[in-house]
Length: 255
Image 1 (cartoon, rainbow, N blue to C red):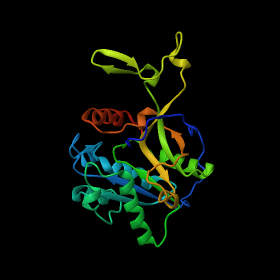
Image 2 (tube, rainbow, N blue to C red; image 1 turned 180 degrees about the vertical axis):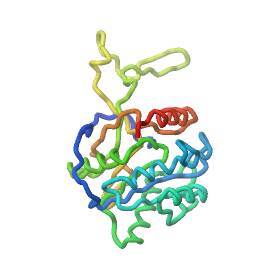
Image 3 (cartoon, rainbow, N blue to C red; image 1 turned 90 degrees about the horizontal axis):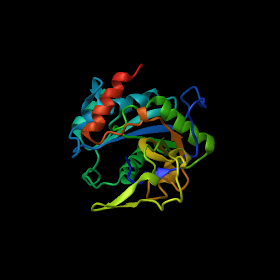
Image 4 (cartoon, one colour; image 1 turned 90 degrees about the vertical axis):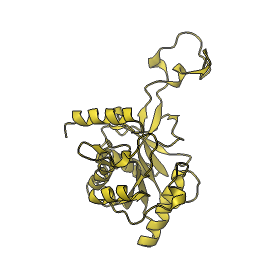
């Protein structure tokens, strides 16, 4: 998940919305970013989940999207590249070393792919949909709903969020055993149901307009719109526990 996610107020809830388009007419390219060399969960992007490499699920969702016309994979790893090709994704390049380390900025990885796309196609696509392989339960419908949202609102970028399970008003900082409220305390008793609903960026779907993306140094613009996903599809795999949870949820799927 991107570090600038944080907690936000969701501007739109797309649950129950109808798609705006029934055929593939949107000028959207999906970009799946998959770095090798994970320290917390080695080999996670090609680890088997539900009988397929982890990265295959993101490619499959993009290929089923009504909006996405092309699926590009950016990786620095030969093994990930081969798994991506077998899943139906394009791997037209391997990332340069400066975009492959632990401290490589995701913005720079996306910018590298955008530059390649412009050279390959002779122009920029209208939309770029960024998908991280660590969100294998995200569906094609989630991708399409996020794209529908950016099209309908004419926003500069859109991303998927989920509701926070622990509100910041209930969080504390610790200095040794001493605890202090993370937020200024409110007077009197406050019920959790009276707290403002907040959402976090779950990392499952990001959609940007490449033309304006180039004008900033961050992935997200100042005024994005948010599509709300439920927690069952928003699992983001960073640790072994996350992977085990994803396996359980895969076993519970009805499709």
